[in-house]
Length: 102
Image (cartoon, rainbow, N blue to C red; front, top):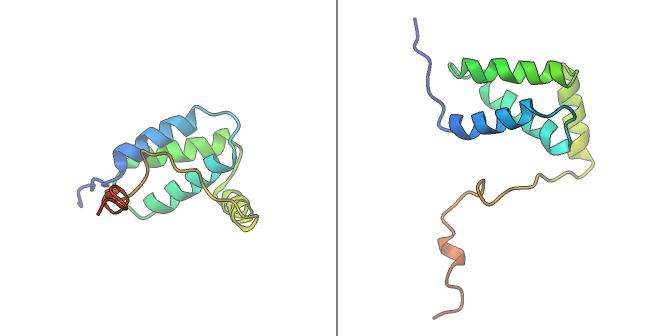
């Protein structure tokens, strides 16, 4: 039997999943986040609790996976761009911190 793996983004994704599961009516960001999490964990050998909660969210929002994918594809095609908080930014910021101070 293969042991479950730990995903490096599990804690961040757990927080996001907890936020999503508490919402009754999702906005476009929420739908895109849910689809993104499904894609990230679909074939991942672990995070079973998170995967189960993703399925609960789908039921709560009255979607199935196909409907979610169609909806999020439409959202992206309409020019959607996700909002990114400073906590989610990637990189050190080194290249932007002392510009012009030579």
